Image 1 (tube, rainbow, N blue to C red):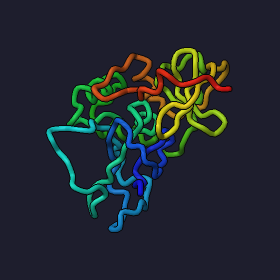
Image 2: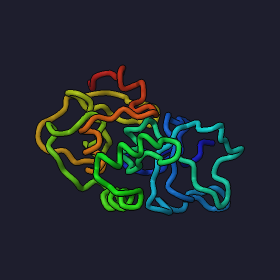
Image 3: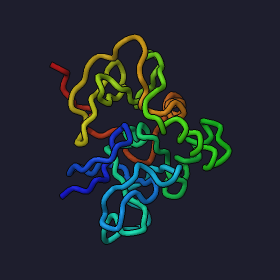
Image 4: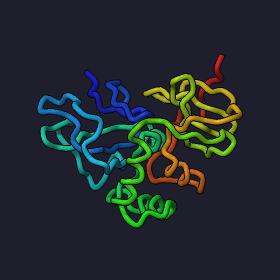
Length: 202
């Protein structure tokens, strides 16, 4: 049975078979039996490499340890409010921090936490959004990519439609949108391979 530790762009934890390409955590979210009991335990929400220095746990969701989370890709992790880990992705973390002018991890995490805690509430012109940002359309998360929007699913991007005009309701925190606007090439997969092959919306 899949564990409830796959993360949507809205930051929700779901139980699906697909694991994704990026790993992370936001503290211990599960109880002794491995059941998810809270949305977050700390303000430090990080996105990590799937593999780092041969570290591996024999079992996931161990009592008293942080809850291992999995994301389809980095764009999904960013939308959910996570930022690069300062240990396994030091160079990515430093670039992210410098681009938003945060003096350190605590200031960065406070800023992101304030933007993500109440869910999508920020608006921006569609024409001004960079590739990799997520927006909420018809109650669903869609990825901005070029002149199109790509529909997110746990297993990949399912369909596409033209990028509309007007204002968008942002899922990705504004701080992270700043980073994307400056260009972002991380050490982890930024977009799932399905982004290159999704079909148009019927």
